[in-house]
Image (cartoon, rainbow, N blue to C red; front, side, top):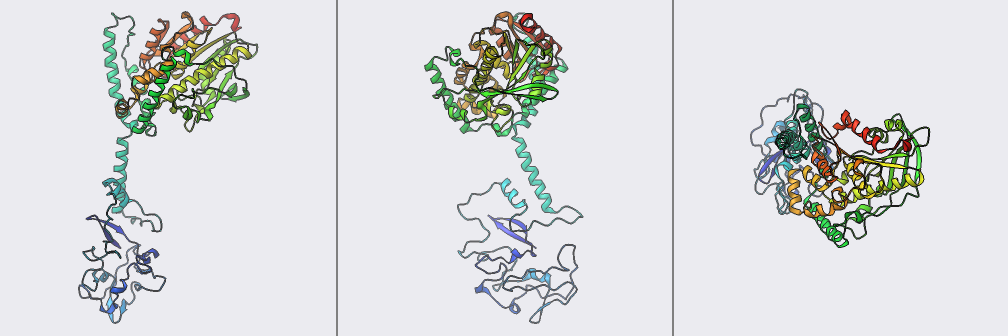
Length: 584
């Protein structure tokens, strides 16, 4: 049976299951739902009909309608209520009056108002005189979407679920629910930064190609400009980078206005502290010299066809207690243990080592990380490999596994993460030199790892080489570039990505420090179509390092894995950096 609810002047049809025992539940204390109130109680033989009863007919039983077997009204616990006779039998007689089921729609109250019609003034009131179906004053009025979702959502709790439509077709309620879900899903998708990022990928690539052609025109007058030959393959790799960037923009990671406000306050406090300590003028002094690890534990593992060692030790790094975000950073308990994978050259004892800093999102699979740095090939050349797990990655992550906590709007955390990464790599270098007998130690890094390797090259003496691959050198710029437009406007308004962030990140920027590795052992490679760290980052580092050996390839951020030119470049860098006696 269908009842009509009057809500704020609008009507909404709901199905009332007349077979449910809950229909006999009481609105007033113990009074059956459909029985008249005590003050209005009358005998059934005095109930007038709006029309004279029609001749007796037997209703046709519809499938699932309940005309053949189920009672029309469930009997309340106290026995009130009349039961409908089964179809095909004698109709119900009440004191000599024949009442058919279809006549129930014409039953009137004693004052002449229809019993089942929509409520009118003076009817369907609760005990306080307030209309039963109208919202209470002071309650917020729901918007259209939430109202539709509420009235179309299947009922739960004590109410039975709505009956399914007959197999012959869809019910109106099912179609309505589908329409509401489609509308709500479309509204959520429209605000999803991943979808909008994918839609912007093609225009962004077109703009990149146009700018490349403009820069190429000035290459003859500026020898620092690297010409970019626009090809379909180059455009495709740039497009794949843009799509990958869009996919990584998870809605749960997007900051709110309160997040930007608190992060901006932390940045300003940190800038004042760094200025007072003199670290903005001399960023290298922010980094303390670490001791070698004393609690290192090692175990042998075999994964993905590789034999390697897994080492773990206490990182021992923490921000200055006066720095904002100290408690938040120390709350990452798993991050306080450093992990690394070690691939040794089999056979003779070799004294050449290469410490490899991985990129954002790596560190979960040791075998994959070792292969990414070509550990088996380097072993044949007599070079041992160590791949540390960067902070908040892999086993050091806190709830997330891809290192997203390093790339949030809270630039204090990103600064702390990079500083701790440089500290952990330097502790491993101390361990290799003091306990493993290493004579030559070089560093290499990809993407975020390229930033870490470049910082270590500015802090450590006597490194064999530094190889910065597709490096990031400016984290505030990177966050500005990859923020959705609405987040970028919010960050600009709050000041979280303003000049204060640039000043604070000087302590973790290789552009603010001098490289200690000799010029002939500095190496950089980058992709011309890189849309993640972008080619501009590598070019800035190349200029700051006085233009050392620089290899470019016509591809995107991860295209170097497939570039023969990059492979030859790295092999040549290692051959020039490591002496034959140390590698023997």
